[in-house]
Image (cartoon, rainbow, N blue to C red; front, side, top):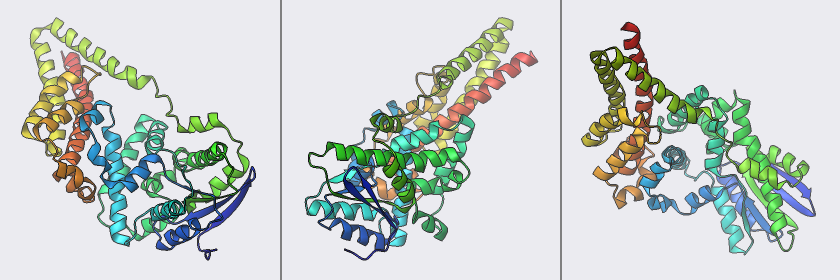
Length: 399
């Protein structure tokens, strides 16, 4: 039995003994302890705090090369891919600074278990689901600080501070990215930590049910910040497949975000109709301001992303029209233009993880830059729609 350094808890449940090992995600000692325990023959299975997506990223760093960017934007996943890259960039900077890969304890525990033929269970919730549940749990005016905090904390600093490193010893990259906000928001804490504790407990019980021969001992490797909550959920919560599905399911989006764009379009078109009814000159002034404001902000977003000149022009021309058609976004059109004009090379996909470690790499790599084009033009078009709409009604009130 290896010497104990990290915190542990032992939970007896349904004839199985779970040894929960709390690790520090940036600690070499934790990685060595997790590996040593996973080598112990008395553990019939090893569970790790990973989801399929994070496991794939850990095992296959080149998986991003298989991305079909056009489909990513078409399916509305551009923002999620960008967020994943930001988290990955933060993790890579930590790796370079500390000389150890954050999450190395998960990799080494898995390797040790596989080497001796023990099954490995991935028990964490999908990272995309967690981020979306965080996003949708907040009101629209609370989401901007979340997005800004993620972008700023993951891209603005080249060196990770000592305070952040200490916090990472009890949480992971996801939790640390929103740490300051989570300390002030019970909702954020619930989605980032408490829900995942409950989900991992349910996954462990589900794995037990699926085993032909029930394991006697299971090693569970999790971040130290999850140890207390997971132990409580595992010892007290009944096996509830419905609850597990509920935790893995995206909450239904509110209806108003779907209705609002059409309502805005109806109001703006009504404004144009009133303007032209009063006089063709007034209507033309309103239309000109709409095109200049909406197209101008979208073009500004494309320019900020250092898009191709034709993409900038295309964004300016497309935004005034796409803003009146909620089924297609200016960001999607701009990204499609950028992809056709500057098609990413194989080398861009191969170097993507390394390039985005530094903020300027986002503008140099064609894949990352296309994501920026999508994000910045989308933001510019949204801002232009509201400001342009206000301008339309200023004309009506003045007239």
